[in-house]
Length: 197
Image 1 (spheres, rainbow, N blue to C red):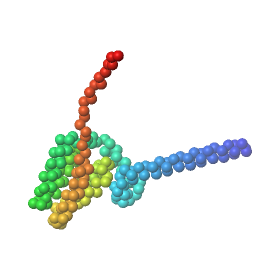
Image 2: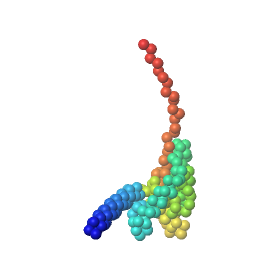
Image 3: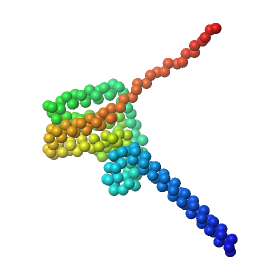
Image 4: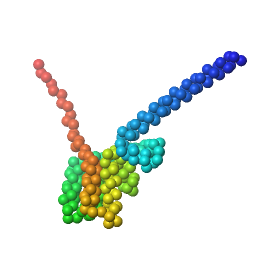
């Protein structure tokens, strides 16, 4: 009887030790995941925690965003495409004094075109902002601020300074999204140089 009791205690102790090791490993993994998400998303991480009401729900949402964006074919612009977008922005900005309300709408439209060209889907605004936050968390707040001002403008609740701020916010996102791919060069085949002695 003592042998059975002793074996039971040994088995029980091993199970407890294994459970503690598993719990510790899970806690470390969870902490690393939280830190990784916090580092990647920056202020968007805190915003998600506030919005979702819990760290667990926010982290689940941020991981879902990452998985969704991984499946997208996000591509950099070619130099000619980037130049075309840059010219369009300069023309838009130059007309601000004459038409501030129109420029805000044009800025929104140009940002949407740029997002589409890069490969972002054009769902509703919150979905676009969530997708952008994965690769551009530092400027997604600019996009939200610009959209909020544009919505207030539609209700007639803005002044010229508000509209200027909206354009500045759109510009921050626009600049971030204006990534350019390096042109690929055809590699010259290596030639064998013969040395005559």
